Image (cartoon, rainbow, N blue to C red; front, side, top):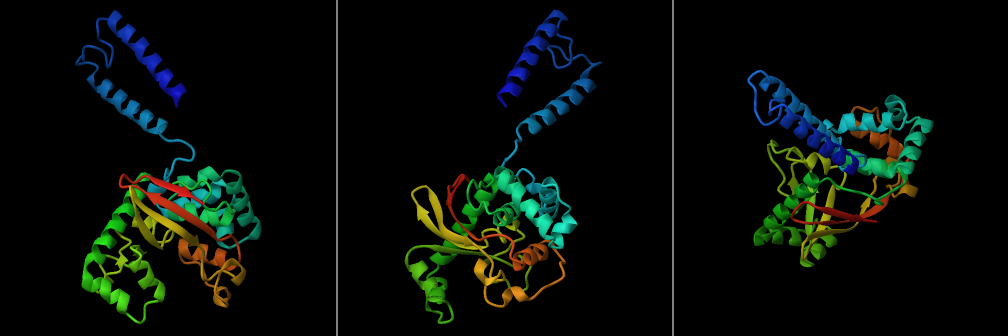
Length: 288
């Protein structure tokens, strides 16, 4: 980045010298000649494009997230030198190649959407080590916690959760300890939306519904902390923290989620624990 900036500064200095020598008629110089305005505009656009590209770097959190989860998954497999179809079909050699690649280059996992990032960490065995979250996703997490916190301020709603005999005891314990439960699911267009679920078709929540999924948030002096959450799957084999018999049911992949589910059922990957500190600015600090 410094090399690029130094080069850019040198070019700018030389350009100014040439512009002065020609009386300010060079494109982008002191005088905008009517004959060069169109050319100047094109050069400005090109300069903006170069600047945007220079701001990206290997391992940049969420660098490819905007392309969507499907393209991120395809890019993740092809980047590892594998055929996406082979991985989708659960070919052991193809999956192993993906696993070994990201174990060798763990920082590149952060470039994808958070769902893909977390799943690659599960497959590669790198876990939460070096996990980074894009600022826009961090802002979404913070906003979602605040929204759920505001819901729970309502005494009637809060009491309905604590007193409901169907809810597990840890729900009552968590709420009484001042923690905020956050769940994702459903759509904002649902006929009967569940108040406890944050619809996944809003903002960056599509990156959270299958990565963090659900979690408890605790207030801190500068935001919230999400402690000792496990990234695991109930349909994994029992030795991978799954529920007995859940991994026996096989299905034909109909979506990117189904592909991941089948890989988990076959026993690929390893569960891991993660901890996050989320600030109001959207900055997220992760530690294993």
